[in-house]
Image (cartoon, rainbow, N blue to C red; front, top):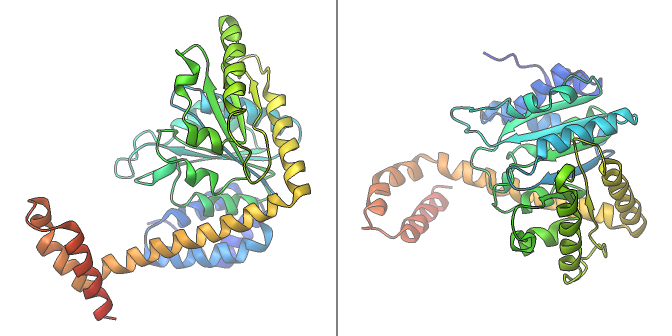
Length: 329
């Protein structure tokens, strides 16, 4: 059985930068046990005054684009410049089997061994958007532990990336060149959400392809209207192997931060994200309490087969379950 500490013990460990206690606190936040949910909620509330000082960066891209490779090289650049970096690497493995849960940590072997960096793999489970349902809590705990930069790597499986956008300050999209018609791979939704685009693996024989892709993406992005932050999305090329473009990536992010803080968008965006988090928690807790109701479970168990066989409308059963739940309260 995993050891549980008091809220104060978790808090003291996290605020002191104790990596082991931070890992245990994140494990607590990821737990589905009711007692752990309450403890984790109290802990996040306790450390809240110590959060908000990091730059939160979401990094996404299709499988094969080299997200882990980029994050290790980019993270190394940051720690070498004096920054402390936390990486929340969301692993696409199953919650049930755990799969290759340490895959990202193995791929980032050098960065994982650096005392200025902290890497935490977490399973996505059934969460849309390629992020763990508890990524927000993990992010706040890392901020409370004093990390300057939080990098959130998503699985980039083509599902809605809105979940990532709604919890970070800067949303970085990694793309590949030389994999066919570049413009064919542009998805308007995700391109509109990106605050920066990096054409990755721009090295060797692929440099010319990367430059052409850069031009294609820039032309495409000019067709999109500016968002509420009034920011024109830059496109740069980079290579984790040669390190070219990594510093440009960081300069792009710093320029964005300066402009957004000056305009007031930085804090207004975070305020909006906090309200989104509230809505998500309301939906999660309401769903949890609803499905744990004995009467609801009884009717659901009795009629699930009828829905499966096409004898009963899913909507009709859902409405019946909700009415039953409301009458019991």
